[in-house]
Length: 477
Image (cartoon, rainbow, N blue to C red):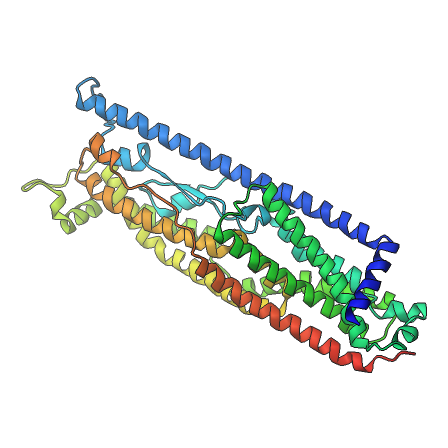
C-alpha cells in the first residue's frame, strides 16, 4: 500500500504543479550557489597560480645572478650581497606555502574565505607571516557567501517543510482522510508513502543537481576520494531530509490545522537553524574569550623595546650558546641584520605566552561547539559539508601544522648561516627544500564526518520514532 500511496502523491503533485515549482526553485538556488562557489575557487586558483609564477621568476633571477657572480661576470657592489643567507632565506628564495582548493571546494566556501590559504615565507616571526592576509570587507565575511552549503543547510529545510507541513492536515481539511482510512491502509502506511515520495523527490533533486554541479565545475569524478566524499554527502543529505520530514510528521500528529502546522514548523526551523547556532557561538565566546589583538600588539611592543635596548647582549648570548658559528678567536660582530634577528627571537619568546593563551581559548571554544552541535541538525550538517568540501577549520589546522613545521625547518636552516654570515652559492639555492601540501587522508575525513553522521542518525531517528508513535493517537474524524 505504501507504493500505491506514493503513486497517488505523484499524481497530486503533478496536478497542482508543485513538482514543477520545486524543480525550478531548487535549480535556481543550486545553480546560483554553484556559480558563487566556482567563482571563489577560480579566484583562489588564479591567486595561487600568480604566486607560483612570481616565486619561480624570483628564484630564477636569483640563480642567474649567483651563477654570474660565480663565473665572474657580475660584481657584487655595496652592502647588499645577494649571496647572503639573510637575503636568500628572507626574500629572494622565500617560497609561498599554499593550501590548494580541495576537489569539492566549489560546493561549499565554508571557512576558506576567513582563513588564509597561502603564506609567503620569511625569517621573521610567525606572526609576521600569519598577519599577511588579503584585504576583505568584514561585513561580507560576517554575512558569508551564498554557496551550496548555505542552500542545503538553511533553505533546503524550508522546501522540505513546505512539502511536509500538511501530510495529514490537508486530508482532514479536504474531507478525504476518512475515505483513505476506509481502505486497507494504516495511518503509518499513508504517511510513509507520502514522505517517501516527497522526501525522495527532494533528495533526488539535491543529489542530481550536486552531481551535475560537480561535473560542470570540473570535479574529477575518476578519483576514489571524490566518490567517497560524494557518498558521504548523499548519506548526510538523506539523514538531513529524514530529520525535517520526521519533524513534519511529529507536528502533523498533533492534529492541528495546516496553517498552525506551517507556523509551528517555521518556528522550529528558526530555532534550530538560526537561533541555536547563534546561541552556541555567543555562549562559547562568552565562556572562553580570546585575548584581544590589542593585548598581543602591546606585548610585542613592550618586548620589542626591551629587546632592542639589550640587542648586543642578546647577540652575544646567542653566539655563546652556538660557538660553532664563530671562527676560533673572534668575537661576535654586531650589525643591523644579526642584531635584528637576535631581537626578533627574544620578542618571539616574550609574546609566546599570549599566543599560546589565544590558541588554548580557541580550542576550548571549538570543543564547546563540538558538544553543542548535536542539539542542532543545522550545525551538524554545516560541519560535515565543510569537511567534505575541504573548507573546514580542521583542514586549515592541518595546513597550519604543515606551515609551522616548514617554517621552523626553514629558520633552522638559515638563521645559523645568518649569524655566521655565510654566503650561499647557486648549487645550495637550487637544492633548497620545496614545500608540498599534504592532503588529509580519507581516514581523517571519514573519522570526522562519521561522527557527525552518527549524531544526525540519532536526531533523525528520534524525531521519526516519536512522530510515528504519536500517529497511533491521530483521529480519523
